[in-house]
Image (tube, rainbow over all chains, first blue to last red; front, side, top):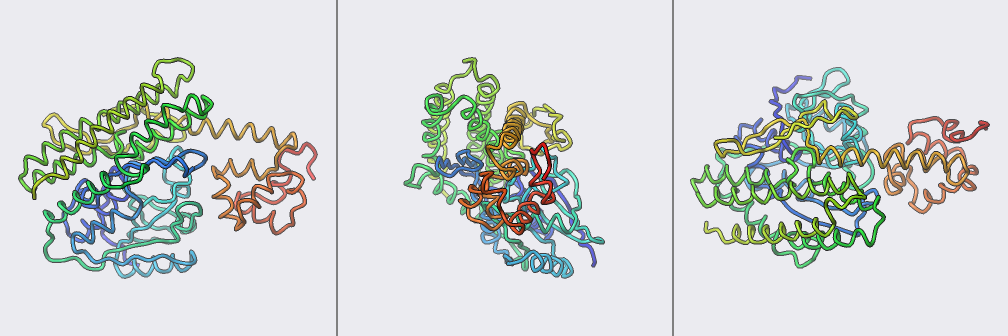
Length: 334
Length: 133
């Protein structure tokens, strides 16, 4: 099997990272922040009734798979994506795509990726990585969270692609089949921003978008009444971990989106986007401060260094600022 | 960019990339060894698992729950995930937490659990027993 000359680049987030790496391989010059913004990656949701390992679900980004799909659609790039019924079929299809010279993106569970530090290896089943070749019984892997390209054994990759739980990757893989001669970044950026403001501001339900921030604030306020101090600490810990999911800088993807707005602004020569980037950076700093205060509360449960009321108040402020921010983003003239 | 390395389960072996504003006001990707708040949360998540694992091991020894409950935690699973791996309903898995039910399970079911946990059937049924069966 001929190995593909694939350039691995480390990124902050797995899906926007894989998207950028795959598109760059096809000669499209796109950075991770651009992929994240065009793919409308930023989001917020809090689902008190969906328990993951007994802890309510909180997310700071859109659902898995959405970024790659949206970016390729918006740039007019054609892709092939497929799920499989058995590991054998999924691995065979991977080998065939690699033989045809295609780097292949895949969904996997971090639990079965031995090259990652054990500290990260929970049953998180929506991790994206790229394989770009096979040597003996090992696959050459470009995992965007890693500094360098790595390798994985056939058996480990098969297990990672067929992990069970929520969600189940079912061997999901994807690759690029055709790229257009010219890509219209300006239009794609505009579409991405419009979708982001829509998802942040329009859901009439309390669990999704900006509405979910005051919802989480309300829940945190009553943690001391509803939960044991141990459980309350576990809940807070989970929010922090989601906020710092792999490499977001603790701001729940807000810095990554601010980096996108800045790049879009300089690309399109628009000062208003540059200004929006600065505003979001400040909001990102407040998210970081929230994580920092929450961690202090968690670490020293008995002391009242930081009260749950205070944490709740910080979140309410963030929620209001983000609402104003996304409204102003929605009103930009194109 | 914080560089708070956490020497725990190889966490410090990986430098993550993060976006931060430089002196010129421009965003760039920077490698970070870790951040205090994140480290506290990571450490806590593992401490909780260790605590629950130790508690459950005691419960198995006292005959209050079956080894299935112990190995499920050891594999960082919950009932939802384990049920999918062994191809059972969640209520069935929960029933298998009862020692009275577990020690009467047929070999096929025991083998299935053992395979998912990466141990042998004998290791599974003998866990927590002073006198191995």
